[in-house]
Amino acid sequence: MNKPFYCLGDWRRNVVLMAAAASLGLGVLPACSSDNRADTETATGDWSGETYSQGVITEMTEVKPGEWKITAEQPAGKEEVAAILHHFDGKVDTLQGAALQKQMQDYSRQYPENRVAGTGMMDVLMWSGIGYMAGRFLTPNPGYYANPGLFQRNTGWRQGITRERENEGRGFFGRGFTGARSSRSAGVQESPTFRRSAYRTGTFRSSAPRMSRSSGFGSRSSGRGWGG
Image (cartoon, rainbow, N blue to C red; front, top):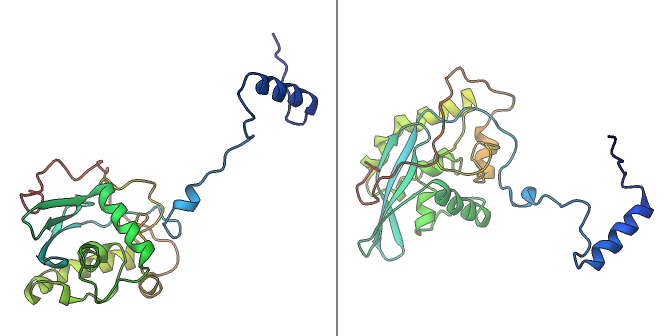
């Protein structure tokens, strides 16, 4: 049996439907809802490329209230990104996945460029290997590390990240991060200076095999170091 279809231009029927809805206490519904995702999206540009072949685990210690230092840093598996936080009061936390992404997004909204003199937790984290992967700076600042040897130990890792970013167009996307892979920094705003200086233009293709992304960095205890 054929069913009648009515277009939105049938104003007489629309008036009847609106009156019926009002009599039932339903109110008047809008014809369409606006999509606010564009308002909250912090990613810049479109990107659907491959992520870096390695991640990084950063350990940070609050050496005095409100003053943090990077006390350990080690390359990790693909998309494995986490910060192990040793608080001044002895508490140990692990910041990773969506929680890490939100903290980085909030910071990058407030500070398009990294704060040079900041010593707070997020100030220091954004100068770590995690911040480097997300495009938050071009020239590392060894002053945020507890000692020069710790900083120099990962020179080769940073060079590898730079090669993959510039030659293969790879980008940052940690395990457990939410949303579509719409930018190299996975919704974390890159430093405008870094973006102008480091990224080439054009389309990049990677010959590396794609790997599936898990929803989190595992179920490891926050007090075991390196997530292990």
